Length: 269
Image (cartoon, rainbow, N blue to C red):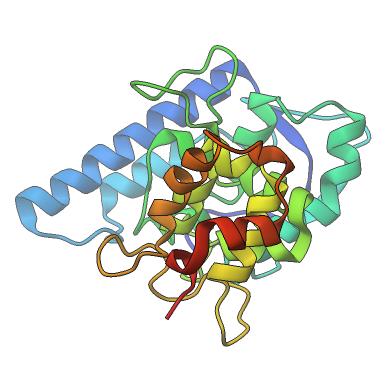
C-alpha cells in the first residue's frame, strides 16, 4: 500500500494518545500549508514530494509507539492489501473490526479512528496529491472542534465509511467515490452531510433506485449531482423530501410512496 511512509505488513489495533491526536492535527495543517504554498508560489501540483514534505512526514505520530498505545487483545490489519477505492477499504475494516469495535466501545473513540486514518494516511491522501482538511482524518467528536459552524463528523474518511458499510453493506457503494481511496466524493458529501437523508432507510432505498449506475458498477450514475438541467439531481432531493413533511408523515413513507409523491421530477433521463 504505502510507498513513502514505511508501514509493517500487519499491525494490531492501537489508539492515539491525546498528544498523538494533537501532533497528527498539527502535521496535517503544516502539510496543507506547504502544498498550498508550492501551488500558489511555484505552480507546483500537489503530489510533489520535496524535502519539506519528507521532513513533515517524519514528524507524524508513530503508529506503534510513543504517541499511540496498543489496545488489549486487539486483532491485526493486513497492510499489504491494496484497496482500489474507499469502499473496499471500508468493507475490509468493517469485516475485520466490527465485533472488536463494538466489544470495546470504540465507535466514539477519537484516538482510535485518528490512529486508523494515520495508518492509511498515504492512501487516504492519494500519495499526498489530495491532503484534505483535518476532519477527514480526525473525527470531530467530544472536545474536538475543527469546523467553523456545525461539526462535520460525517467527513471522517475511515469512521464514516465503516458506518455506511455497517448500515447498508455492499449497497453503501453508491455513496463512495470511484476515483480511489484518496477521495471522499461529492455524492458522499451530498448525502451523509444531510440529516434528512442520513437517517432515512427509505431514502436510501430511493437513492439506490434513482441514482445507481445503470451499468451495474454499484457507484452513483453519471450526472447525479448536476444542479442545472436535471430535475432529479441529488442536490434537490433533500429539499423535496423536506417539503413532503409539511403534509405527510415522511418517516412512515415507503419507497413506492416517495416515487409517487416526488413524481417524474425524480426519474432520470
